[in-house]
Image (cartoon, rainbow, N blue to C red; front, side):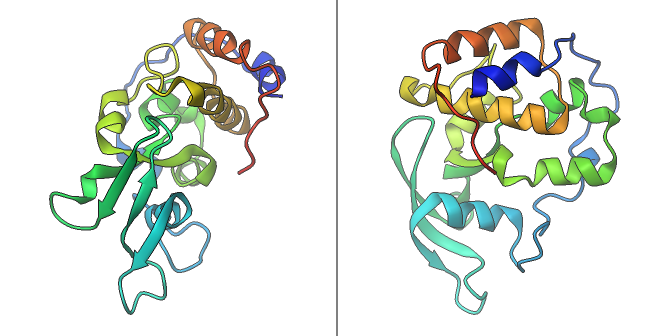
Length: 190
């Protein structure tokens, strides 16, 4: 149960953002599973329906598809291209900056790269909502679709527990309040 795992997560204050940059988490969208496709395309393949691949990429580069956005419940069309690719973005459910300030700065570059490319921590979402969330945690941002909030915070708990990332007191209280409404919520596999 997500609530049981939440109890085990350490509470501390936020460390300074000193030294943080996206580069601290390795090259963006690495092929960490060595399947020949970068992580971004792996997540698009997993989370979109009616996927069309660019010819000649061995069903790797997603050209188009439809996202059922978990954060809003809306159907969002995806078409690769300037001005359209940003409609669907890949969200780090536990934002890299948030993770950095809550313990990831202690991880090796290899572990941070794995963290940034871990499918458990990644969801294809509506670009506007990903931008709105920015590097917020559950104390500062939640998906507008209330019926998805239990799954969302359970995923954050799973990612933080897996990587020994701590939470602030406000964050842990916010997550506990959400999970109290869905006491049977399981930790997602990933």
